[in-house]
Amino acid sequence: MREAIEKFLRYLRDERNASPHTLRNYRGDLEQFLDYLAPPTATPPSLTQMDHRLIREYLAHLHDQRLEKTSVARKLAALRSFFKFCVREGWLPQNPARLVATPRLPKRIPAVLSAEQINAFLDSLLQLETASDAAAEGTRRHRRPGADEEESRLLLRRDRAILELLYAAGLRVSELVGLNLEDVDRNEQMLRVRGKGRKERVVPYGAKAQQALERYWPVRAELLCKARRSGEEKAVFVNYQGRRLTTRSVGRIVKKYVRLVNRNWDLHPHALRHAFATHLLADGADLRAIQELLGHRSLSTTQKYTHASIRHLLEVYDKAHPRA
Image (cartoon, rainbow, N blue to C red; front, side, top):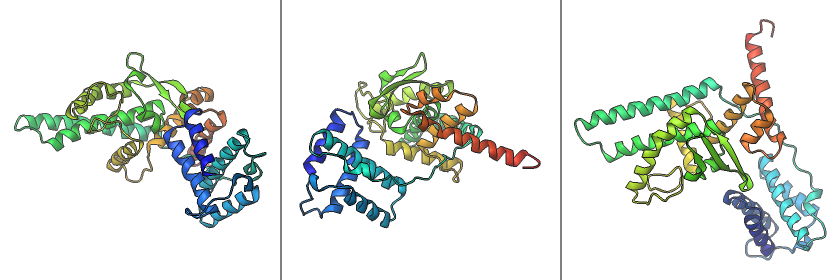
């Protein structure tokens, strides 16, 4: 069975163009299932011994471990995909996981900051950047800025460009860190984005993000120069060592600036994507157009933002109507 899992993961990587993040999740979920079936040192049961009752017992075990329903559903989806592959390869007559019901998931409406709150947040970063530049100029008149001061100033410009672009284009964080220089059309203000399954789409970005990017390009060149890396480095967003930023790094960047503005906000990179879609919808954008911009395969995935907009309307109604 371990050999079958390795072949399945190679299939996902080579034929389905699955991302490293997706591959890690599938590997972790399938290995956890194997560990449940047999200790690491023992021989797991063969594929032909798999049936729906065994999978149901595994899901009950996960439930007893107080795992979230969303996590249980994801692990079941991984098993379904794996056994579907086994059927396709002729190793199994049928998919045993198809007979197992998916846990009923709560319908969660994403909490989204208002357009005014997002604008105020991003504008505060511009104010920080302006103040940092003014302080650096004042310091130069008396002494040479220290290495830490200069690093902080450079990274602030980079970080503002990241936050502006996340909101301006509604990018997933993996799409943002995967951007290469050749993907940015500075004249047309367009991005070529590689989404899930390596599917490409073209997304516009606005004037504010363009301004932040134009201020970032010299910083990027300086970061690469200080790291003694060649200008042939493809990544748009790099760290102080001249290496491509990771998704975790972007998450830390967002949290860092949220704490400076409002500690009560639950703002993370994906929340900016939610805000992008919800604010477009609230201002009259077509749902199909938003689906294309977000790179959603199914319109039903995009439709959750209509619920967020309706919730916002109800909140406004409850606050404003005299007989609400």
